[in-house]
Image (cartoon, rainbow, N blue to C red):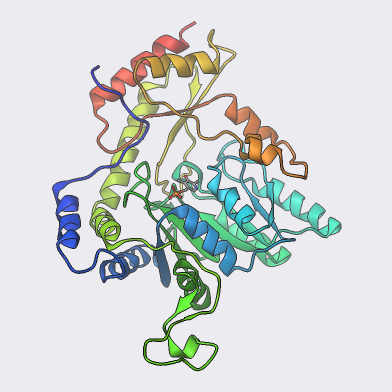
Amino acid sequence: MGSYIPYSRQNINQQDINAVVEVLKSDWLTQGGVVPQFEEKVAQYCGAANSVAVNSATSALHIACLALGLGPGDWLWTSPNTFVASANCGLYCGAQIDFVDIDHQTLNMSVAVLEEKLIKAKQDGCLPKIVIPVHFAGQSCDMQSIGRLAQRYGFKIIEDASHAIGGRYGDDAIGNCRYSDITVFSFHPVKAISTGEGGMALTNNVQLAKSMRLLRCHGITRNADDMVSKPDGPWSYQQIALGFNYRMTDIQAALGLSQMQRLDEFITRRHAIAKRYDLLLSGLPVAIPWRHSESYSAQHLYVIRLDLTKISRTQREVFEGLRAAEIGVNLHYIPVYHQPYYADLNYKLECCQEAEQYYSEAISLPLYPALTEAEQDYVVTALTMLTNS
Ligand SMILES: *Cc1c(COP(=O)(O)O)cnc(C)c1O
């Protein structure tokens, strides 16, 4: 095999390029009309009432936490099996972070563990203000159950759906926020559709949308009704909150808008590749990913778990062997609390047993729409040799 096979990558066609070039030739590279069009397109696709495009999912998570009032003294809980951004957003707000262990089968936050932890937190008087379930690998969390717990224990929900645009929870598109306050998508090049860098926050709550729009742009309003004092004149704008420059450019939005046309096609293709992996790996000492029969996964990742009792090599040796064969395998994820920054926080984080067990066996195989059958066969052959005793 000639070239390096990444674990994921963007898929750009001529139509995408044309859409970007059109914006480059227009009057507005940013703060023009394409960002609202992209927002509208994604909101419509998901069936959410409002959407706020920003420069990354990390920014979206940050302003989502702020809009929900997270601050010092508050707790934010998330899954340990995620990218650091799902937890960092809480630290940005001065809140404390804790992790809810994952379910062995779904690899998502375990509802049973969440409930146990809530019961205990209630007794101790430290219930979370926000819980961020992460739809790992594109498979939705059990949102109905988490939503029920949110009502009982009074916390807010932000869905980190960075892996999950194009997926469904039952009959609902992920992002419709039926059981959550806000849902966040990422458009980084490894995700289902890309804007280079970019993210979006969706919500059915107009007030939250308004608040996130304000925070996206310095906390500045140009709307006289929102100003806190009489405007100086027609040139007037007022900063009424401490916001940021988290804006998405129209160049990025044009790419996103164009990519949306192929989102369903991308997910279908990801499923076809995943099913082919399922078949090709069936004789190997590895567990293939579990898929919910009633919720359509966005199939962002294809994660296998090594049966190390049947393999003579270690996880690291298999991983290194694949990398040496120019296969860009990855490990999603190192439990977030392993990160030195988290280990150094001034409170003790509990170890999550399932997340640890999973971390010691998992490897993400290449999966993206343009992956060829020949490349896939090459990956499987290399894996077969490395897992042979
Ligand atoms: C990619 C990712 C993010 C961060 O997305 P950016 O757009 O790069 O900021 C957050 N959470 C999860 C689960 C992700 O996979």
